[in-house]
Length: 124
Image (cartoon, rainbow, N blue to C red; front, side, top):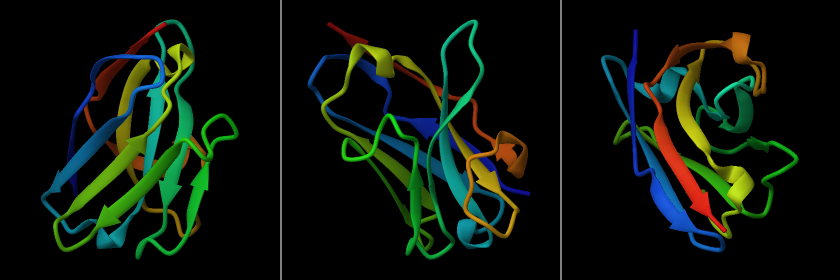
Protein backbone atom coordinates (compact mmCIF):
# COMPACT_ATOMS: atom_id res chain seq x y z
CA UNK A 1 0.00 0.00 0.00
CA UNK A 2 1.24 3.48 -0.83
CA UNK A 3 0.64 6.69 1.14
CA UNK A 4 0.50 10.01 -0.72
CA UNK A 5 1.01 13.55 0.58
CA UNK A 6 0.48 16.60 -1.61
CA UNK A 7 2.05 20.01 -1.13
CA UNK A 8 2.67 23.21 -3.02
CA UNK A 9 -0.78 24.69 -3.18
CA UNK A 10 -1.52 28.29 -2.34
CA UNK A 11 -3.10 31.59 -3.34
CA UNK A 12 -1.90 33.04 -6.64
CA UNK A 13 -3.09 35.49 -9.26
CA UNK A 14 -4.37 34.63 -12.70
CA UNK A 15 -1.47 34.01 -15.06
CA UNK A 16 0.85 32.81 -12.30
CA UNK A 17 2.38 29.36 -11.99
CA UNK A 18 2.44 26.73 -9.25
CA UNK A 19 4.16 23.40 -8.90
CA UNK A 20 2.35 20.78 -6.88
CA UNK A 21 4.30 17.93 -5.36
CA UNK A 22 3.17 14.47 -4.32
CA UNK A 23 5.44 12.54 -1.98
CA UNK A 24 4.83 8.82 -1.75
CA UNK A 25 5.80 6.40 0.98
CA UNK A 26 5.20 2.79 1.92
CA UNK A 27 5.84 1.41 -1.53
CA UNK A 28 7.59 2.50 -4.69
CA UNK A 29 5.36 4.39 -7.10
CA UNK A 30 6.94 2.50 -9.99
CA UNK A 31 4.13 -0.03 -9.55
CA UNK A 32 1.45 2.59 -10.23
CA UNK A 33 0.08 4.84 -12.86
CA UNK A 34 -0.10 8.21 -11.12
CA UNK A 35 -2.69 10.89 -11.55
CA UNK A 36 -3.85 14.31 -10.41
CA UNK A 37 -7.49 15.17 -9.83
CA UNK A 38 -9.21 18.29 -8.53
CA UNK A 39 -12.45 19.08 -6.78
CA UNK A 40 -14.49 22.20 -6.14
CA UNK A 41 -16.94 22.17 -3.21
CA UNK A 42 -20.32 20.93 -4.36
CA UNK A 43 -18.96 19.44 -7.57
CA UNK A 44 -17.65 16.03 -8.56
CA UNK A 45 -13.96 15.30 -8.45
CA UNK A 46 -12.48 15.62 -11.92
CA UNK A 47 -9.47 14.25 -13.72
CA UNK A 48 -6.57 16.58 -14.48
CA UNK A 49 -3.61 14.50 -15.63
CA UNK A 50 -2.06 11.04 -15.50
CA UNK A 51 1.35 9.56 -16.21
CA UNK A 52 2.44 6.02 -17.01
CA UNK A 53 4.79 3.91 -14.89
CA UNK A 54 8.02 5.13 -16.48
CA UNK A 55 6.70 8.55 -17.46
CA UNK A 56 6.75 7.85 -21.18
CA UNK A 57 3.04 8.48 -21.67
CA UNK A 58 0.77 11.17 -20.30
CA UNK A 59 -2.91 12.06 -20.50
CA UNK A 60 -4.55 15.39 -19.74
CA UNK A 61 -8.03 16.76 -19.30
CA UNK A 62 -9.26 18.85 -22.21
CA UNK A 63 -9.16 21.98 -20.07
CA UNK A 64 -5.46 21.88 -19.24
CA UNK A 65 -3.20 20.66 -22.08
CA UNK A 66 -0.46 23.13 -22.82
CA UNK A 67 -0.81 24.72 -19.39
CA UNK A 68 -0.23 21.77 -17.05
CA UNK A 69 2.56 19.19 -17.11
CA UNK A 70 2.69 16.01 -15.05
CA UNK A 71 6.02 14.38 -14.28
CA UNK A 72 7.46 11.72 -11.97
CA UNK A 73 10.70 10.44 -10.51
CA UNK A 74 10.35 6.85 -9.36
CA UNK A 75 13.75 6.94 -7.68
CA UNK A 76 12.59 9.82 -5.47
CA UNK A 77 9.06 8.43 -5.16
CA UNK A 78 7.70 11.80 -6.29
CA UNK A 79 5.11 13.10 -8.72
CA UNK A 80 4.66 16.72 -9.75
CA UNK A 81 2.09 18.85 -11.49
CA UNK A 82 3.49 22.01 -13.04
CA UNK A 83 0.66 24.48 -13.60
CA UNK A 84 1.28 27.55 -15.77
CA UNK A 85 -0.97 30.40 -16.81
CA UNK A 86 -3.40 29.61 -14.03
CA UNK A 87 -7.01 30.69 -14.42
CA UNK A 88 -9.61 31.43 -11.72
CA UNK A 89 -11.47 28.31 -12.84
CA UNK A 90 -8.45 26.23 -11.82
CA UNK A 91 -9.31 26.99 -8.19
CA UNK A 92 -9.88 23.66 -6.43
CA UNK A 93 -8.43 21.13 -4.04
CA UNK A 94 -5.90 19.08 -5.97
CA UNK A 95 -5.41 15.40 -5.18
CA UNK A 96 -2.63 13.01 -6.07
CA UNK A 97 -3.70 9.42 -6.73
CA UNK A 98 -2.22 6.04 -7.58
CA UNK A 99 -3.85 3.58 -9.95
CA UNK A 100 -3.40 -0.18 -10.01
CA UNK A 101 -5.04 -0.46 -13.42
CA UNK A 102 -2.98 -1.53 -16.40
CA UNK A 103 -3.89 1.42 -18.58
CA UNK A 104 -3.53 5.17 -18.46
CA UNK A 105 -6.93 6.59 -17.67
CA UNK A 106 -9.12 9.26 -16.18
CA UNK A 107 -11.62 7.17 -14.27
CA UNK A 108 -11.71 7.91 -10.56
CA UNK A 109 -12.60 4.29 -9.84
CA UNK A 110 -9.25 3.15 -11.26
CA UNK A 111 -7.33 5.01 -8.57
CA UNK A 112 -7.06 3.07 -5.32
CA UNK A 113 -4.87 5.40 -3.25
CA UNK A 114 -5.37 9.10 -2.60
CA UNK A 115 -3.67 11.92 -0.79
CA UNK A 116 -5.42 14.42 1.45
CA UNK A 117 -5.33 17.21 -1.13
CA UNK A 118 -3.80 20.66 -1.39
CA UNK A 119 -5.78 23.87 -1.97
CA UNK A 120 -5.08 25.99 -5.04
CA UNK A 121 -6.79 29.36 -5.22
CA UNK A 122 -6.42 31.60 -8.26
CA UNK A 123 -7.63 35.17 -7.97
CA UNK A 124 -8.66 37.24 -10.98
